[in-house]
Image (cartoon, rainbow, N blue to C red; front, side, top):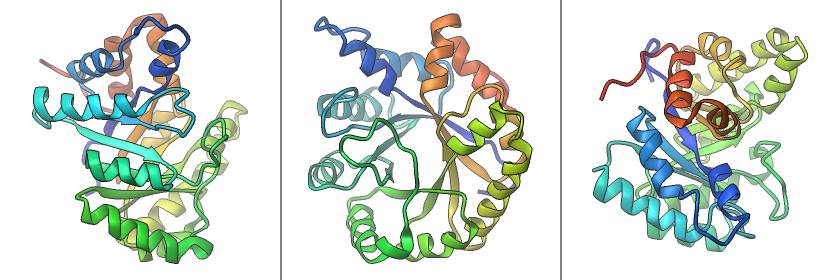
Length: 255
């Protein structure tokens, strides 16, 4: 991504699916919500199916792929996150999303909370990345903001990294975000030097996103789910999407 290009907003719909799964009545509908956020200007849809199917399920992934391919005519990108176990890899090869974000989650983990140790996992990740790229998907690795790890991430064959922004969000909330942000800037610089595109996600919100975007001008994409869903409970999803586009320095979507 060239400096100055717009950062894309991918909306993670896991929390919508989690709410739906609390009752066996089929709503809120994940596909319907995808239509709403795309109509409001979102550039992509993200989901993270987990083995226990506690929020987004395999059927949702297949339905969203059909929506994007058939009704939206590939106007937005589909990003599927997950740990690369056998079932996940087979699903990716069936769905062939635009992007796969590999995360080192344990099956029972509540949420993603650390990036890959590429020094340990490089050989396995290289095989997996090659398999997924052969299926037609761009591959991104979920990474901690460690500048020294970015060359190793590139050596796996991945095309992007997603910076894990949980520590930044926590520090920002405590009034200490500026100090930690420099670490992310250095990591992004190292990723760019290694030829990697830069994504980011986890606990980004309307307050901490603008300074993060300004500090990393080559930020290609942010994936936001929890915060945008929480904001949507107050102002609705279309208004929430527009607010996050403005937080990225972009004009609201004009239909």
